[in-house]
Length: 514
Image (cartoon, rainbow, N blue to C red; front, top):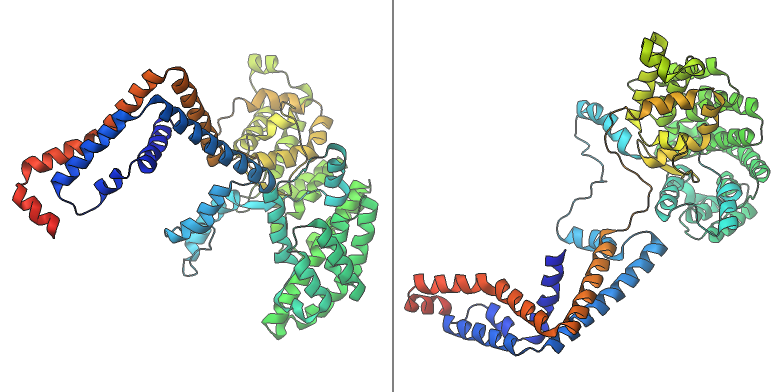
């Protein structure tokens, strides 16, 4: 960092204060003129006073401070660095950068896709199956604390999901759907809510009712009422599009959209029942939904079912669901791995004692429980700290990264009570998880400061320190500055001397004239 800061500071010393340097670098010129200008340049450096360096470093510190203030304001408002965003959005394409998020070549073989399926599924960002309601739950936190529980990045991903699942190319044919197509792109919550009301004034619109249930309803009861209204409209649209789905690509897209809308409504209605204490009703709704749409496993509806069954302490049914979804060919999750570990731990945790186990060794059932915990911790090592309450829980995000801190938060937020209900399960987890060997994984969505903010802060602090030292010790800092610049240009002098000694002066004169 210090070398970068020195180079930055004294680069501007040369550029702003000495026009000779531009002439030195200009090509072609006669070698004797170059040498003369180098000597004049060093003579100019010798005439600089300590006051000049004080003014220079102070000005650099002021400029760096202003950049830092702007970067911090932009980061707090938009969640990203302005310099980084400009670099990625505008400079990278000009320099030939490749967007890693672009889809792979359509000609790639199925074998390659199958071999990479597991790694891709673990690294991509998934929608949280148990995400809270914005109006009834997330906004309540904002009213109490005055803080936003969701990051800008998280809400932007949700906006993309809404546009993907709730819109299609033929929406412009119906005025209500056309309004909602624009509403899902709106960043302002009030603008989205106003658009949803406008859509409902024209005709019954399922997606408009969904938006109001998610963002305007202040209680789960209000949200459930709006979802029931959306369900009535959504089922009618689904039946109509189902009859026409094979009549063309346009109807296929409509049917796909109507299917997504119907599944979303039924799932959220089941979650409303779960939150209102009607857990058995929620289990029935989730089972029916999974039977009606068995191919939509990407929505991870089974995770909602697992949580509801654990609340009912129906461990036999939990084991049956795990037997179906805890398969090597399906994407794993913290819910799958830790629920399997909980069931294994439940069989031995009430009588488990570390001292007794060290004396007599682990039994077969205890070994199975320990191995299950090891497997779960290997998949996501962040979860135990939340289950053991070594780290504070926050509201879960709307999106999670598999094997990351966000998935651990989302899992522990809903499943901590289930671990506490099983006597000794947390004790067995605590005795086991620290011995598990695991690798470093992502901590998304932890909001880390971008590199440019840290760099600007360091540069500002460094130049301010230089200004202070130069003011206090002008002679000493002047010697340091001249020595640094002399060292910086020493290679240039050396190269020019070598070139002069090797090439004849006549040849050099002819080359500079070409």
